[in-house]
Length: 389
Image (tube, rainbow, N blue to C red; front, side, top):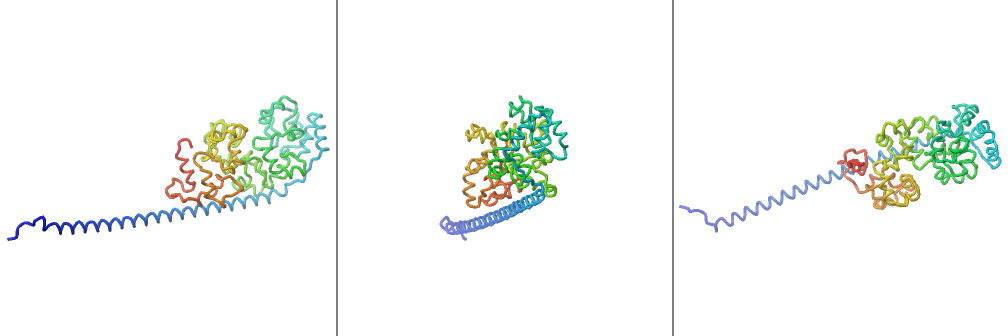
């Protein structure tokens, strides 16, 4: 009769079982690792495929903007007027001003700034007769109430603001509208202005808009006309179109201005004026964000020279700060992004605009398949999760 197995007899058998289990465990672990690697590769490929698709969309949108800009220029070309203003004409304007409303009407008529559909010399004279009345809005790209509030000496005088601007104001470095930055426009069109002797606004109305010259750092004609295809048929001045109806349709004047999002954060009363006008006159100082990824209050705090210089935050970023490598907000590391983009970084726009218009899909592949909205860049998705965004 065989007795119970002794520990000495069980040892080899247990050792064999342990070894077998260890081998099976190792095999299972390798299988899991292979599965994880395959899953990671698949996710990476899917992420890359989605990034490639989104980059293709961004490029198609860029092509669309270029085509819309070309169509607009072709439609607007016939409206270009070869106007020039020399010393004699300027002296004549100053002399006409002394003839009160009739003289003011002639000054306006000679400038060509009055909208033709809004009446002739009699309408201009009726406007000029009201002088510095903040409720009298001329049929031109001049904001009467803003001009008077910005330049108190004009408000204290007797001239209507449009007459004042044409006869004196432009030469004194004054801007006619919150969305027409005289210094910005003059710096970019200095040669043409010197050759024609026109004021910045006259040049913009008669020549510049049709050739795609932006009136303000935050109003991009090429960006705007892509959203209003009718301009490719009518050739209407894009800024005039925005002020007349575009803002009501929440058309965006700049890649870094999310019009609908911004207007949705205003009170009902505040939302009765163009969103960009509200931002540049009130919103920026209040810290209202024009875009998820641009924080004006943060920007001013980080770069005290901006506020000290009297610059509006986003305008400063678009014109200078972005190209200097400044961050537009806490979500965007400009130095890292610019280094990753290298020579592919566009020189004609700031880094954040480059990122939003396709650059996001060319650097350090994000897990775009996990974002809440694949149409947004990864940083826009992360920023949207913040209560303050």
